[in-house]
Length: 118
Image 1 (tube, one colour):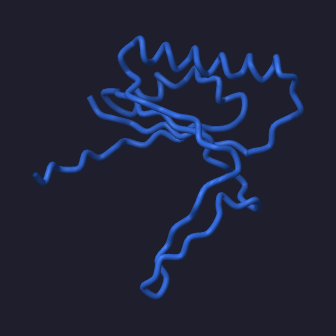
Image 2 (cartoon, rainbow, N blue to C red):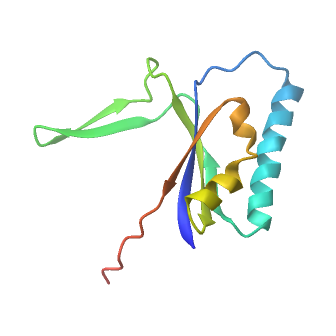
């Protein structure tokens, strides 16, 4: 089985919702994730913090750290899951009923295993 990283992308803009509506959305994500876990396909995943992070780059030999993600970005990365699937087709089938499609897109990328150098 191959590993795939599934990244949840959206605009970062959310309509005004009641606490009950927000809790209902959270529950949908939890139920969906639990189904993948129960099926033995979910290896891990987390929601990322809203509106915070750091961008690290090297410039002229020195590390430069800046706040991110940037407000001018059209998309934000809101979370991720690591799943197992035989191939892309199966991975896409596994995420096809994700509640995230109500808010944005999912990017599915195969994880290339790094060799063990020990």
